[in-house]
Image 1 (cartoon, rainbow, N blue to C red):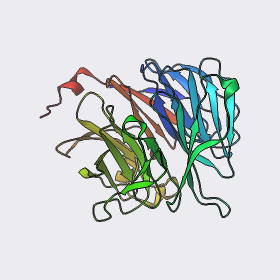
Image 2 (image 1 turned 30 degrees about the horizontal axis):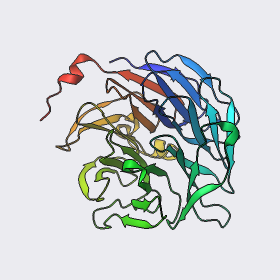
Image 3 (image 1 turned 135 degrees about the vertical axis):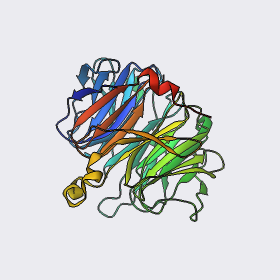
Image 4 (image 1 turned 180 degrees about the horizontal axis):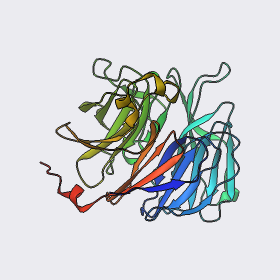
Length: 327
């Protein structure tokens, strides 16, 4: 399995996202410029210029016409995927962190960081079909969690929003009323910052990765813990295969601490685990620094990883991978 090395970013990667068809890959980095690539051969298609700070997160609409990005420049922007033009800018009083389109693309959730005395918040915005009709007002603003909210995604049927972040608590919110419905059980939950969250294709369960060196699989409705995957390094990114019962964890310690650890920790591999048995299946090495982003192609036949080293590595699986014994 030879990776395709995609060099287009000058700074560390922060997020990767495939479109629904699996033919485009969107990457975000700290270099202000989200980029779109062909997902089969790694060719760079274009960039989205306009942000003035690190871009933390992005999401693409179901029909691949709209892109939304959240940035440290205190804005979230809507883009036309094909032309790269800015359609609208949502301005905030603090850095925007996570963004996620609802099913149907009529709503988007955007989280903002704590900043200069402001607490973190989750904003729900209505997305107009015609960019000329777009307004900046929030339908709903949810507050409560302490510290940064690193991820907020829509739950089943857009009825809920699932959020997680620095306070290590997974929360489920009602999208109609804005009420907090559930928090995860502290006994079984993460002990340190939750860095990443990935939903299953059918939205019935989701995976969280944390700096406490573990990833956990949760039920989307009841918020019960299903599985825990233990690794020996902080987890920065998680992904779930849409095809097989595999989860992938990526991480490594902070870039500033890399030289202080033994050679083993410097391998920075993406680790594959059996989703059900919780056993490690293998790893994919290659990055020269922690892995910050992971994404599976919707067809399950390839995955990509983005690292602190500024590279996106695109891996098309060998036929052997599909023969890994599963229960």
